[in-house]
Image (cartoon, rainbow, N blue to C red; front, top):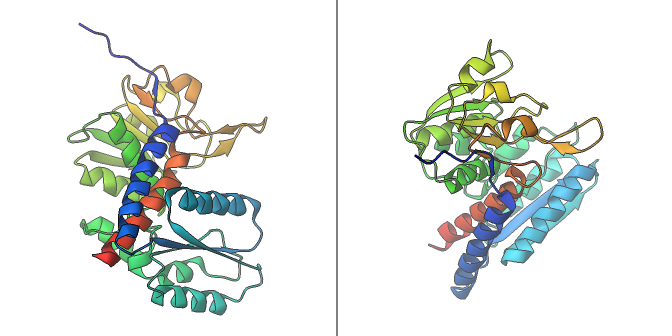
Length: 287
């Protein structure tokens, strides 16, 4: 009997590249029909990390043939002016997706901004209507990071039907939608969070673990059932300044059947799924 192989890396860079090639092909087909997918990206203020994220999104659009409209505003931009600009983009038929980079300056209400984006163009999948569509199983836009996590799990060949999945984290952007997507795939889902009495009790029973709390070493080797699939959404820094995730990678890798590295796992997939959502928005508009 063949012994199972543990510690296989789930290469988010390779999977992302494959998916982007597919996006580029579909964009070309849409352009041949006279429609070019368009994504409007708005950056307010001078947050350095946000500037990097936006630059990567704009480059990814260019690489796949999606037209990007990048608009940068001073941190003093009035909330009313931002909402007015979103309204104009909602009405623009050449714009299929609208993304406002977070965080916003303190005087701007992020919830109000997100809710101002048309559901048909909410390619981040954050608005209340988009969340409701996900919860009720309607076709809508899935938030990009959980959507990418599902693709990473799928790439391992894991059939989620009947499997026990544990999500560590309950944020509106990752934890909650992640749990809903796993449910849609017929997994039995447990959500753990800061008030969970014994997280290890749940994770030791899990076939799939998604760690998404933004805290180093929240998942260690003794908390993982041998052969589990581990997806690390966290983005943290070691005391030495090295990028790391929420999972104790060195300890968990030999126990897990498959595991995502940080960097090179979930990160590349988030922007890729944004491209997929923008393309799907354009395809719906052209149908």
